[in-house]
Length: 300
Image (cartoon, rainbow, N blue to C red; front, side, top):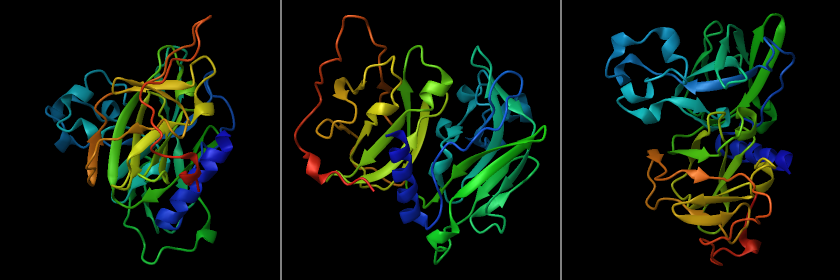
């Protein structure tokens, strides 16, 4: 099922910009006892800091730097980015990282290469991993150009991930609360977003720190978590905005804020999943309705 959801995301991206892809790429080896992965972060610029002289370049490249979030003028322009949800004209930094047993995020020096070698969709600095997404080409290339991928090479090993460039639209920022979940478990969780008639309009993978940065059209109206992407030690259920929902149930979508406009919108509350408790069943849903019948769900 997970592969089906990721394939659906790839098709959604193809429809949006004529290229792109979705997936986690593949690691090739192990460095320092942990499996590296290619991640992308939104680059922090000094103009977005209240005290720019207090931070080193290395600190600005690490989302785990203590106090950095609090020093941002606009905290929505920082964080780990699902690379399949990059928007036109955004600047990010691709990094090769691994995570220590205590959750520390370690950045591994690497060189980077992009399958878009001609720079049709953006410009990459091979030494730093800085990537500036360009404007959507007009007309877009044929889908037969394949998915975009970013690779990182370190110690003779290469690691990669897929990425997409989407047109500027709603940047929805949120958090999944999952007490006791590991980084790898959080990064398996997929959230789907739908319009008012149940059509799938965006898919986002939760980052290793529990955050997500989705990119979707203003017609997005509701969301759910893909049930089989929730770790087995948690209920296939989630709470949001004071209500309980059953993950993946078509008549049990959680409503997004109304009146979405292009630009950053932060969800007013976190999406919470709870660890399973012996002898207790799945929490009873309280926010469900029959407003969206199953037959109208349009997964691409």
